[in-house]
Image (cartoon, rainbow, N blue to C red):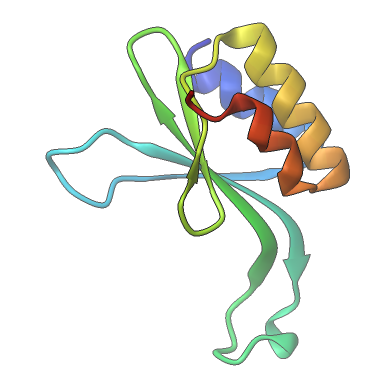
Length: 102
């Protein structure tokens, strides 16, 4: 799945998606954000989100970073779509456990 296809898929699920590059030597990170927090409810007067995932593209798959240090193994298209759909709907981080590296 290309980055553009992934972004369209996530936006169709209702997630907000941002692309960022923290370092010129690294690839881009796809940030998936759900459940917006209004500016007036944040300590620094900028909008925030209650939940976030960070997707990193591998050669032909994607790895998801979540919470402080959680990370999935590389996921192919169907598995990735299934996991992201379930997470956007439920926002239960426990579902990532079965996708962690062995």
